[in-house]
Length: 198
Image (cartoon, rainbow, N blue to C red):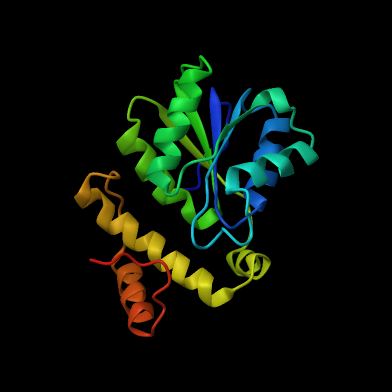
């Protein structure tokens, strides 16, 4: 999304297979960009082996190791998809008495657009700012590993950016023609990964 991270009322770090999201959340907390941080995520088929106690729990532990105080952390351990990340985090934030006007969404770099579109559809009254680690794409794929799985994940994210507005799950986002063509070529080449069944 290329948003410039700036102060927000609360942050939500979206669970995933990338523990670097927790490190980025800790870095942004220490930069003073938000007073409260929600770690959101249960388990998904792609993360259960890596994070057996759930994404949010493991992300919280990493943030504590990096010096984020426990009292600044809220935990949302049930979400199994991005829509639930937003819905369930909103419930946790409200239960804590926080009434935000702005939310900083922290995610894996390739997930920013889908997270933004989902949050804008489900929580339209808040201003949404997206953030992720500032990394070169090739370096990011190598750092996460499982390159073929990463391509499948990217295809799944793009498919959701395209399809979810039709289902009311997200706001529409521009997808250039060359991106759609690349998506189709990769899908035909067998990179199924996390694609939706349509």
